[in-house]
Length: 307
Image (tube, rainbow, N blue to C red; front, side, top):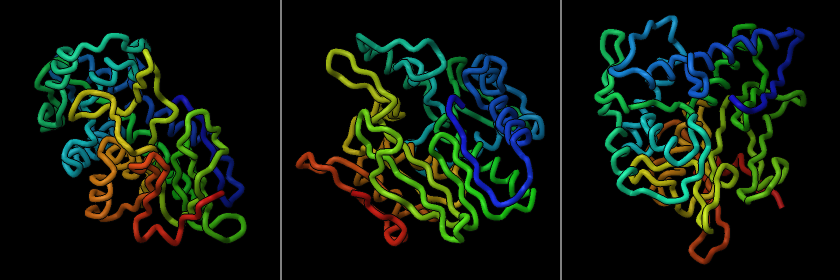
């Protein structure tokens, strides 16, 4: 997944080999950088792929959740955004910053985006056009976190914290017998992973954070971020700096964090308010240019701002 992982749990089991095995299996299904993965086979196919429920269970788990959340967010989250991600230089194709934006090209790629371009029936996932491609990067890391958590639970481990690249699943209590404390980074360019904006107390919950302050490039003074809007086809530029979503499962939190980055701040607040099972902590630019925050109601007692 191109990042690190940290796992803390109560118990004396030696599980590194089992954990690595789980993550390798997930990668074999959903890693777009692996030419032999299931998702790469689908992306390179002309019409689609025949998927065995057991052999491709990780792919199908990501696909089914991605499809559902795309519908629930009215396309703010969309797994078919891959052609646009590649065009802007953030996908599996060679990383080349776009130095001259071709609006007609973006418009043509937009015609390949949308869950209506897919059909899944009788184990066959079909695409309407050869150019339709999938990208699960906005929820696969969270799914990997959940899978490792489920591995621990299968070993009767009830107190644990799993973190992969900043996405976290926590269950039970920490070594002190209290809630797990998770840091939320300052959404500032050049900030280190230890520069924290707030801390969050987690008990039997997961959290995922999405932001545009690390993965971007600049051309002629214009910054292009890795969050691509499935609506416009362009890197999203709005007042949202960082979106942290808390949910029971990390995959759900991961996907909704991305959706909130695509939406403007007010629309993201509305989405969180109307969606059961998720809470949010947003950091965004106020109209006067200062940094502002939003904490959903049920999360207010669990968030502590750090000076």
